[in-house]
Length: 145
Image 1 (spheres, one colour):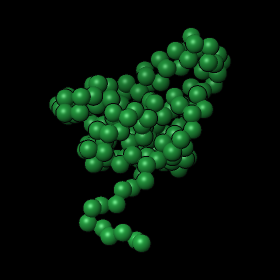
Image 2: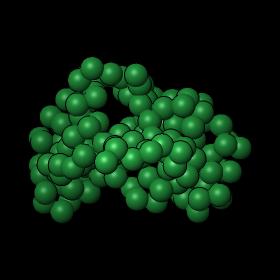
Image 3: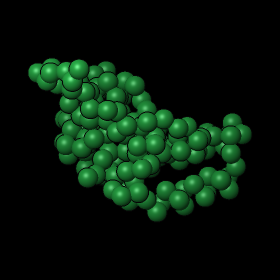
Image 4: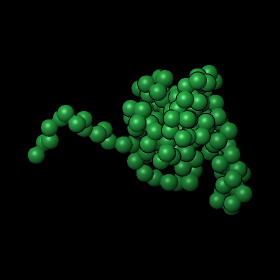
């Protein structure tokens, strides 16, 4: 099954940030494809250049990381729904950038991998599952105790 990957997840990999979302997305990437809006390309590279400027890593490490992620099965979606993105941005007070990830997940009925709390909250509200987050039992289920 495919999922939507946010730039925050991929960037966290170079910073060695490990949590359920980053680990879950990395594991899924080993056996599944991912999809991202076109802005993902720019967001990842901007974060890497910012990391270089802050002395977190070198240009060589950036180049290697970009080579490594280019081998991953990440498809870039270049056709967002403008009304959908704007509606979600307004409804959840998200940036248009974050709403682009959510719109893709909603339209394709795909789980979302993100570290952004506002985006994750909006995804939950929209009924989008999150990579690395355990499914919540529905209110009509009984407990197992």
